[in-house]
Image (cartoon, rainbow, N blue to C red):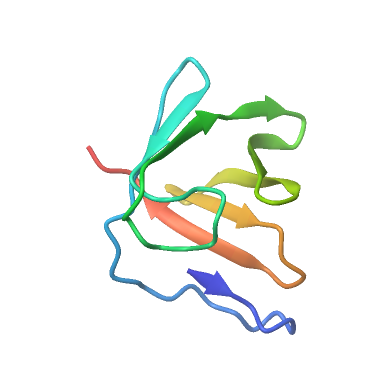
Length: 96
């Protein structure tokens, strides 16, 4: 998880989490945690659709306001970008 204080000094920190996300070719996903919330807890299942546009892969969210979670691949990791004033990111590694 990366939560930058606003000065660009933020670094990814390891967390103890079993949160998993599975993406399917039909544009859907499932997770054992909430995707539209900046949490690492794996206590509640969620599912939905992801979209692809000129900005990359996006997961639309609406709780309580509409926003998107951005997805990108970087150095073999999935990076999820949340709408914060400062950078708020989660990093996942692929499981086989």
